[in-house]
Length: 516
Ligand SMILES: [Zn+2]
Image (tube, rainbow, N blue to C red):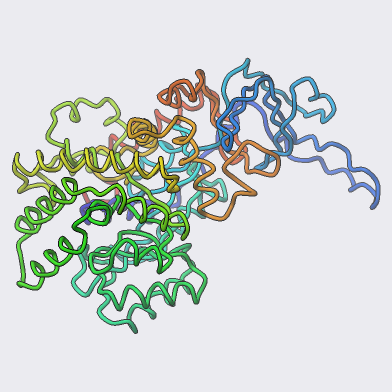
């Protein structure tokens, strides 16, 4: 969610920058000297150990599933794959060409930010420099201009081919909303037929999942759910106001973003609150300020009538149906505290493009311009309710994903994921659970558990090497000594170089191609 002009400007730069020279990927230490040109071994013989192998030794390796550290391991890598994890002493048996001694430091899987928007040209390297190996883009290829219908595909292509440094990407469809959509350029869908066609078109375009939004009418939502199943795409997003959380979960919604609908769904007065909302909506058009006031009152009542028993029943349904939660506490907290002057002092602002920084000023944001101190007080009270809800869901075992809503005010690319991990721990997750929400959780959610999300044989070569133990203190994920992304090793100086590049991209007063 972002002001459209800025997204357009940002994305158009990425789309239209004149033939960027492929950026060197800075393979500072190890890997690959390209394989030599000797003849392949005869069929049936044992192949020689490839010379492209390299290893990290004396590493404390996080077992994400167990939430424990295993000391003194060697991790053997080859191109974009972990080929073995074994005691350091046994390393000679696999004889890698090159070894990096990490001296007992802590190795965790590459992190995923499971809710981003990715429209700032400074972002790609900021993700990698912060150990964020992958992102889930929640509004795929927004059509803000000619050629933009494949902008995120183009980015993914450039990153995957290593023409540019950037994270792995999972990409949503365009936002599917009701006939009067909240965001211009999203899809306004009024009938089940339109819903089914939108899913078919999205499938044909090659997206990874369908994004559903707040104003979808019931029949359109259920048509989208059914058609998604039909074409084999997951659907995820906001729970529309026209359906209950239980209905969305039963319909197969794969993840719920920003806890949409959750506070009301956990209230003993769920039915009454929903009726109130319908009656209010039926009364005709209301101004955004009126809607805001109404929603604040609803949230306050929902929090006051939180019903642990009712909530527990819902949580069990979410677990049984495999419905994940992406609380995005980073954006919820930023939006509730945006008038706090400390935000403007955040040193990480130097890594955000100038035009974006300007748009983060609440007086420039159409959603925030007219907010009153009373609105912010209510938002902070709601945030408390949200944080408590995350704690309760975690205790019940509801599966959780770490996501920031990057591109929204003070949701920083890369850095923000570490904010989210910290907020999740404050909400009651253990450090191990928070780490799982950014590693193994995303792998399971995406159906890629065999190839990513843990430090084990057969997984992709995405790793973060930390100076201090993140299980002892989650803020230690910020103490990054080195990163392996797509098999490329970045030591601290290489990461600092990436951040310098981010700063220099960010410092353009406006986009070289225009816009602003
Ligand atoms: Zn979002």
